[in-house]
Length: 254
Image (cartoon, rainbow, N blue to C red):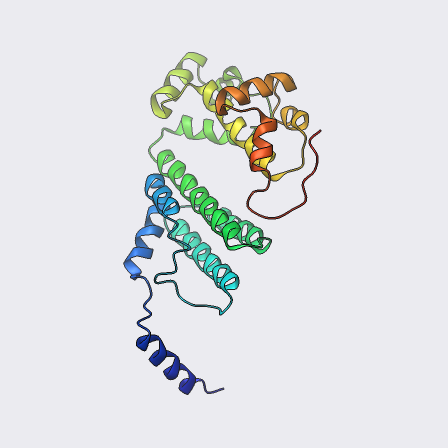
């Protein structure tokens, strides 16, 4: 199939209409910011809604919604490869890419795709930020973080971690505070709350099920800790954010 004539006509029309793509260095800067874990830069980019700004956005489809879908896939693919090149484990990066593209496929509006784009970019960026931090951490703290991450749904104690690392509890606590800037127990609680927020937003699990899953002493204890960390109860958080990035039927709160 010879498309050369059609291409030359398209090129002529674009030049006549002064349609130009964004400067490529702008895109590279954004991808680099994500790969380097520059959360502040990425947040500013999202706040400015650069992704959906029509100025310089290539036309990949005559349909505006489909055009955004294509751009989302391209952006996700580029971010994935930048992050792998910068050190993210390849399988994790590609799994994240697949996850967000599948979620995007369920979106029904440009606004939903835009918000999912921001979530995706900040997720990759936060993971890269954590990766960069770990690269300058001592081996015991890296092992400690890995253990916490893989056992987050259990009740994790400092004693348990110290025994796992063959360190004293006091030494581990001081080392963790020095390198992470936060007490070990606070880090564990914060991570549990972040994971709980994800389940409240993206799953149908009840509050008591989530409390049990993360081994809180009781549902009331979970609610108390959650409210202290976020300023609102788990129930109110779910009402505000439940599946806000794509359309799906809500399940009544139990």
